[in-house]
Length: 250
Image (cartoon, rainbow, N blue to C red; front, top):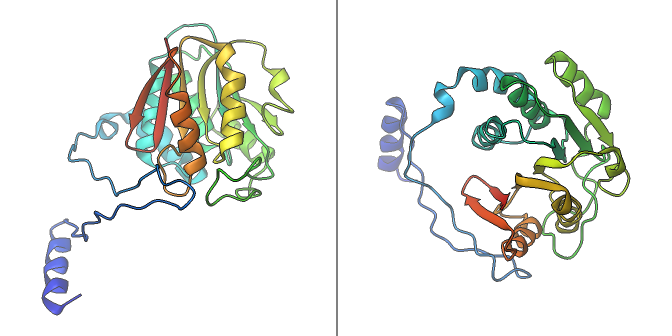
């Protein structure tokens, strides 16, 4: 960076602006040539979470226990707020340290606490990785425990049922009610497929599936599976540029 460029950038920083090099490069991994990536920078600026005190209070309580940014957290919050009294439970698979899962429970409580919340994780890291996955090899994100998630739930005054083990293989039998909302954050193709395929026949009419990591560079397995789901006629698909693939049962 030239001296003039540094001075311009420093001056911009002093007035609260940031100057970054524009990245128009189109990239893809060799094994997924059809999944093209380019940096996305939407021009919209409306930030409704800044004027939502209940969300901001909840987010501050969990943000250190989730890898999700505020944009995805707010989307989870606002989707749960719209579920209404429909029959079914809220399920998160891939809860890690519990931040996003407890946020789901807090969102449900904010609108009356009408739904049972289940938080599932292996608590031994990512599983079922394979040739469709780019960066994950298995065992990542094992730095968590079921006890830590339970403690976070209690500290925030919400009740959630913790499902420890591979889902759906080892723990799905504990869920007896329909699924109204699924947040799937498992990072690998086969794991995401198994979770969603188990959920689909149990998904309530109007039920929502949020597929995390859809579109993230390095999570091609999840993106590929999301694209397979798009072919289903019983699901309405919404591609949100924040890294969520959202599916609504028609």
